[in-house]
Image (cartoon, rainbow over all chains, first blue to last red; front, side, top):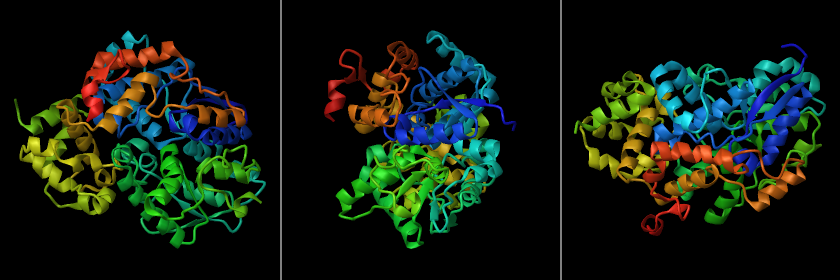
Length: 296
Length: 183
């Protein structure tokens, strides 16, 4: 990619701007450091969550997702997201509408009543993939001013970043590499742990309908990370962030545990390595506290 | 009325294409889905069993099975199925059919209420606005919750598709109809 400024439409979704705005600042700051501008998508809504609204009514989920895509199309820009749910929803909707012309016609009939039209002219990217593929690891390494030497990182991929692999296009979902590459590029070490690829337990409406069960599931995953000697967990998903971070407060309340295992959206760790402060990234505003090791 | 399998193929086929849904008939009960299912470790969800029930047209049993709603849509089974059954999409379609017949929990309906009121499944509140300001962001993001005319577009879509009726939404109260809210 050239050094000239590139612009993306930043699809915020719900959890990022409305619960963890530090994820939003981390994405904007990291990309700005590489000459990439993040443009606001005025009037965007919930993606809407693929496992939740997609489970209630596919025929409502799809036009709402298509409306969000149409906003980016009107801006003439590709999209980036900071949540696997948003990635899952928008990329899947875009894929289905491009594959099935009759479906597109039907969705556009509904969108017309809302004054919008889906054309199929944008592309849905995950911010982590933009960093890995568009910025590239070499340029990332150049911007690291505080290498994360000696930091052991548990990588949690979540679900819709990798799966279904035929839509996501990041290779086999059983052997992911993108976050491992990024962790190594900032000087940290990815640690192997039991059930590394397991879901956080929140998706598909499970957290909403039965929080206790979903927390029990998350607890097991956190224990596995801690037992493997990780100093923190990074992930590419605002919804996983909610479950992994706020979930620790909830499980401490529910199960009498005393978890305080640091949770970071991957770009927050990257931003720390690029010299941004904990405060600028909202890391002082969440449940889990950051250890000195990550901040020095 | 046709069988449950016919309904799954028709309803899901409209979105994913019929061939995608017809993979359900390829399930040979090997159990690889259930073996790798993270939910199955902590809940009663047995994807293999659900699919057999679907093949056997056990409509009411499936729609009334609480475990139908314990799939997090992680796609592990979908990725690993040796017969190419599009598991996760089939589960979502069965949920759609169950919801159409009123099998939808109140917490789930309430997410729908948030979406109809704000355009967001998770709306913003005053505390989060303060955090945004401290980070140098606008107190409210430029989304449907901020702009009424933009929210109306989402509401129009939901009226068109009947999502409001699906969750028993009362437009006057901007909440669930009384009977539902009490459940």
